[in-house]
Image (tube, rainbow, N blue to C red; front, side, top):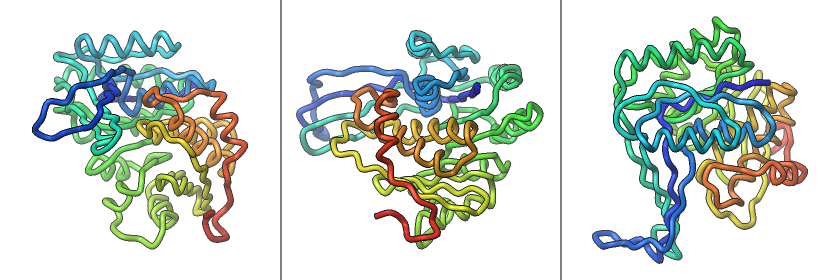
Length: 311
């Protein structure tokens, strides 16, 4: 199975360790590290690590864009997409021993031109011919067209390649309007979209009006997966969380991979939760190790929601 991973707005993810994060003061780093980032980049790296070939599409700007492409290539992930002016954005996650821990700062990223946008979609169309699924995750660069998801859905339909989407805000609303095959959202995104509903399962049910597979994550409370009005809940408790940055993206990778392998809601939910949890126990931002996924998956609690959710 080959998955086309689309990251319109990639990033360099930086992990910055501080004693504390002080407002209106100079904050000196103890040490820092950098990783390839952006939601779609995280999805691609996770898919590759769990054994599924993937191609990564993005807009790449300046030295930071080239650095990300070089780093994922070292891991075995090939990338493509137009080169654009400026620098690919940097996103910083701050780790402290007290106030401000897990604070994140995300840059906006470069602007694109219409010619670059046309090249982006043309290249995606070419690569979709050999893909078994497409998954687009995260934000878009400035000056991106509002009909981006409609264009991706047109490519997906033409190539008979199921389209999965992970987005937020107005972009999520636009994504649902094109009725993709699958959608992943967290509870904050779901509440922003549907308002207050009784439970995460109700958000998954509502999302199924727009797609075939709906994945709604509720942090430590796990994943609620809806398929054809059938709901499944799974969870796994991570005892020592190092960082949650990228865990939702790794979960997306697990859900997409397992669904297209098995079309089994139980297996899909377990794999998604295992991948999301595996990301939390390593310091590398947005990355996981396959052996961690294998070990955790055996301990994931999962059940159809004909009974109360797992507690």
